[in-house]
Image 1 (tube, helix red, strand yellow):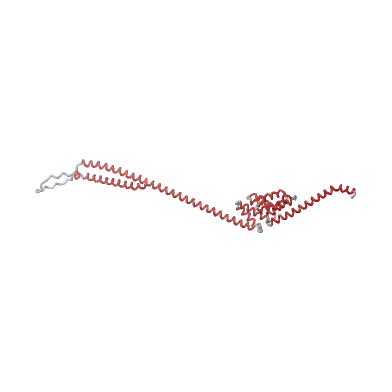
Image 2 (spheres, rainbow, N blue to C red):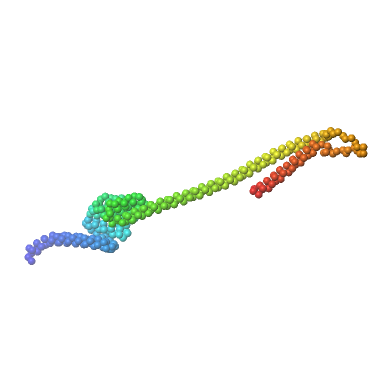
Length: 339
């Protein structure tokens, strides 16, 4: 090689090696891009086969290292689905939120809302899930996917115990989307809601009847106690009234008897001091054969019938007093055991 060619080679060499480096770098980028594309397809295939962990291991490098936004977003979307299928709901939500930040590809951002809504439902964030799914419902046109969004909105409401609102959602799904994969699921939920409504009505009826029975029993017992108390009070009052009346009657009779005794004493005293008046009879002529004798002096009682009458009255009063005392003692002896 002449010196001239050697000199030219030395001058061109640096540029040539730079071109070679650039060419190698370009080939590497193409190679890696092709590898990520193949890995993405493989990850999706593994996911469809139910090999969730293998799919995740394949998709994570693409989501974190790919320089293409669309490729990265695609990997994040399928990662969200894989995590959801594995029950790792927090990671699923995080993958979809990372997808929302990339904003690529736009359709996957919209589709990811369904996965996020599902994951939020599984974590018990029902109200947030409803908002995400409603937004997804308004942005898509596919009736099947709309019906899926409706179903999970209904599931959120059902889990919150808002059975009336959930019933409306399930009924709308059945009437508007009869071809939905969730058609039978919605029908089943409606049957459960109706059963719960019946159970609620029965429980309410049982509760009402139980409370009513308790109220009636308590009212009956209260009235029975009031009746018994009133009866005892009436019996006591009647006994007091009878006692008062009997005592008043006895006292009045005693006063009357005392007055009668006093009058009898006065009459007896007057009668003893009044000589007896014998009836006037024409004496018969003495028989010549009978010796006339002086008649015996009659007793005061025989001489004064008025005294006899007064004594009889006194005896009657005495007997009445004795009977009264006996009646009073008998009444007291009957009252003693009751006390």
